[in-house]
Length: 132
Image (cartoon, rainbow, N blue to C red; front, side, top):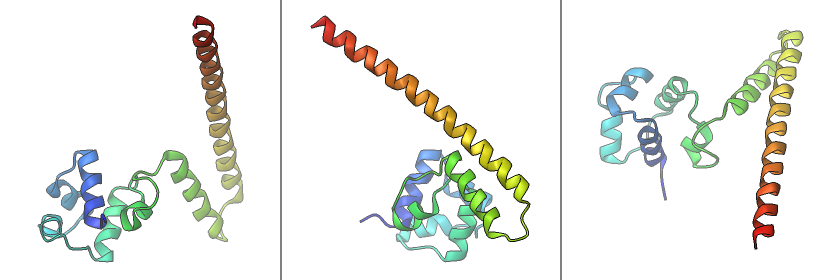
């Protein structure tokens, strides 16, 4: 069963990141990543937090538990950022509404693209059926 080091290696490979690059960007102790990879040992929560702060596209749930996708999509990140604003009672609700409108616009664009894809697939299927 893959562990956090296996998943961290998978992320590093997918992004073309070596031990030193991650160590520097995340502000970790020199040799920490290499040592953990060699020993197949876990990482302290402080170090995991530093890695997640340095690589915001890395899905924390995936890294820690293996659940979900490796990367956080831009939409998911905007949604999480919006939720953080909601949790802050002193937040500016006008900006929250603007962000929600932006999210709605993004979703509308995605729906329009999906509709175009659906129509294209229908035409392709119809052409394939008529060719037979």
